[in-house]
Image (tube, rainbow, N blue to C red; front, side, top):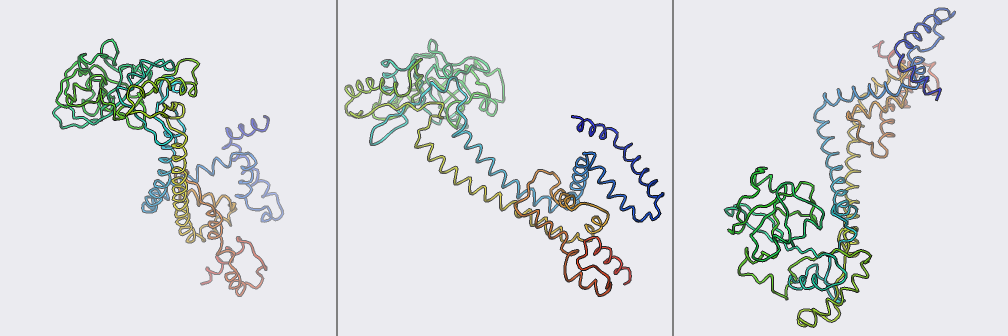
Length: 452
């Protein structure tokens, strides 16, 4: 704790401390018999900053400033780097979002752990839907479910027919069981909208209200037209309403009013089409396995009533909302696809980072002279490498591809450590050490240049 407080004190009083340090070094150097042996003042000052513990803050600030200036000087490089990395990172983010919605995040509805999607299942086939008339009978005669939710989606035409909208016919308890109320107006209720001859009612999504109805709150209570049939718009759902599934419909209608919009359809009475998606709310204390067994009696009654449409070994399989209403086989398929896409997008990101690394190296090879001067003035090699990274990625958010740092180190210093360069220098300076450091090579190169 004492060390931390001491470093904070140095940070607050840094300007004064540096002035006092420089003055002290100058006085000490002036008292020496041979001031040249004192050493490099800049290097000693940098080491003192390291000891104070805040040199990294100066490094980051300077690197970011230089990086921004460098990117502004080379817009073509900047645009190329940003496009490459945006493409690679965007693919990875899209993949994660898809996996998050499909596999990781349960639907944001009321008690998804007790809401089940009921599949028709047999040893030979399965179906995600059931006939509407069968769903009605199951809802009336079963001991496992406290509520049954029904949905049937279809595209319809809004207004004068110029606007197409995906519409869901739902049971009147749809919104209350999912745990959402309206943003304006009301939602469906069995007491008002449960009868086939009830006044036609419409509920719209927030997106549809904003895009097609201009976010006008006065539309609640007005007459609208769907498939050229008049109905009253009774409610608008809030933007956070998620529905069930990936595609949220724009309009909801009571399912028992299907015949009003499609007078020639046998939807409400046909047994031979699995035209309705059925969800069931399990009663307290009823597990999915127990619900499966308890619903077998309802399926037996349907087989007795409609033997040509139901098989002897058929049952209803509950798939819970906590697993995103997906069976294990479906989840495995999605995991396989996501894994493949993950490998491909990871490869894309790796190639993108490698391309950026190559751009960095191509720029670093032409800066050996500048970097040699900085080394001669006492800059650390790690400091110069970090500066090269920020110089080429001014935003500081990009990570080097594996091997980039090593390549930058090589390309930065290869001229000052080249055996051929040192051999040529030894011809002009016979007293050159056998293995001179980068500072010595730079100084001799400068002296040689000045003789030209």
